[in-house]
Image (cartoon, rainbow, N blue to C red):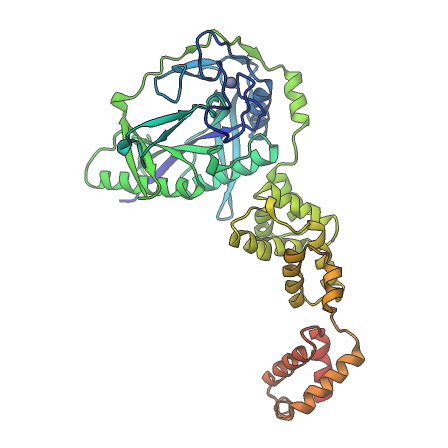
Length: 479
Ligand SMILES: [Zn+2]
């Protein structure tokens, strides 16, 4: 039977603040274990938390970027549970009064724009990290704890159950990453856990109104695992229903290596977190004036950037989407455009040779060694006819090697395109004399022979001849 899949995502975002949520320890990733810690973030008795204002500012900025209403009255709650990664015995979070409510994100899947609701965004602190002696907790002799991450600020973005396919869920996550990168609240490094999500997945027969029982897949920490984890889960639930069984509400984990989800706990043994307001942190008010000030700092967001690229600059929607997806790439494009008027060529180089080189070297755009200005200068040399598009690839490779400017490379390597009619005529003459058979073939109506002769002239001029001019000259001589 065919079922409809209902998906809601809870996305956890580590904020890029200098210090932690409630103390002045550095919030940066890594470091020797337990060196970014103090009595507050390790939950020593008597230590008091002090709220980092930047955390609230970043949460508000995210809410504005996701079209949410910013809540004026705010409070923190204690979410109580016992686990070694949480030395206080509770996590500071917002249950009753989240800072943002009721927003949306527009995603585009297969050319169709779809609006996904945002239920709420709340602030919370991260927990520490358990490091097991073995491959997993079940085959380890012991585990140690690193509290460097303990109390690093997080926001949790909760979506409405508006997503209908694993692909939509993946595109939604990619869109969130773009927006979060653009507004600068997180480095969004999924491999370091600064962007990760839990997916609530259920299925229902198409005619059924109410949602089916859902499973929550925990800790999906790559776009690939978001899509694969949900794909696995929708197939698993469909198999249960097809066999006449009942899907039970439960929490499951995704095993990336084996490509399956495992049950962690069912609803019956679900935790009761006994939430209550945190008495150590006073409620705070997000004044309208402050929210307005934060709104003024909002940069151009991905959708607006895409419109600018497709509108005034005339890029196709496909090219524009490729360019704007990551902030570093979009900025590289804009920087190049300061030095050339040829948007299409800049996009082609970025999405073609530059992306291929980055992928091949497992690097990101921010690591790309050629300044955008030099790529633009290379494009200008091609457009002016100084450099052939074929030899532009040689210049590109030389820029990667030596870091020199394109004009310098063209000069040093003698790559200038030959557009001098006299010089080209001599070369054409020479090739015709050397290949009388091909010349006769062309005269006899075999058009293929012309391509061969053009190729010979290109070879004779070491690829520097202007191909259009050779074509014209050959046709004239052989007519
Ligand atoms: Zn601390």
